[in-house]
Figure 1 (tube, rainbow, N blue to C red):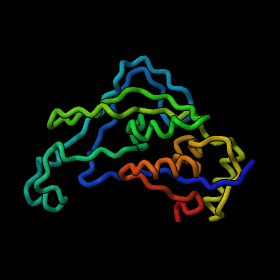
Figure 2: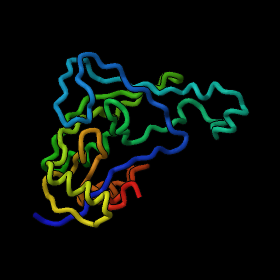
Figure 3: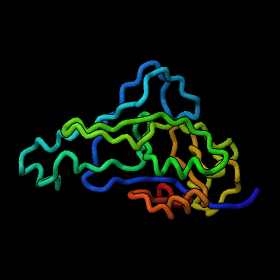
Length: 196
């Protein structure tokens, strides 16, 4: 085993950030962040809807929300949304992550539709990551989070969940590849700094 740093992969949107509703998917075991294979017979693409109803507010409310002058198609979709069910990831970020060996991920074609303008974005995937840290790795990373230590020993996975429904973790090689691609809104937090 070699010693390497691990990072929590986060992504913020660029203002104005789209509000996206979870899609309705029939016959699907939930949640999508359990590390288990998803058994879905639903048709693809999975359709997400942008809720741009905030633009229907009064001028004063739009001013307060810093939305005055924006149109429906001005809303930005973050390149990674792990809080959605299923989580959503852009194609460019997907290409980087899946270029690494030992990444076990299910991808489902997705569309993000702006319900106000009718614009459809189809360069996204719904995803299900089938990798959760093995018990010892999870325990060590959790100790790192709690005790603010710097490194953890593992070369098992380049991308994984720390635990079911937990933060998305990447190793240094994945971090550097994503940084090189300059994907908007993506940032990293050392697991040792998580929650501090």
